[in-house]
Length: 124
Image (cartoon, rainbow, N blue to C red):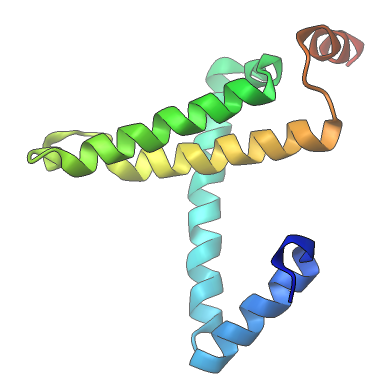
């Protein structure tokens, strides 16, 4: 199977086959849904504080934010006293999920320059 040509329905079938084979499909999907729910809660809370300001970011800026989060996770993993950091890596991973969702929204809109974004915001 060509993974680059695998759409979401194809990916769902692959996940279903793999999880069904191990008998853990429902548990795996439940855990996945819980993670997505936590990420959504973080997104909603931050959106309440900052509004849709992320829409002003270019796709490259969102990619940079993901990179910063990945570097932060690595830094926390390599710290001997990482457990003393209150936010920990879970928050960083949830932020990465949300930045990925933002990037996918930007990709689906086909908007990546600030003028187009500002026009789009003023039209709504």
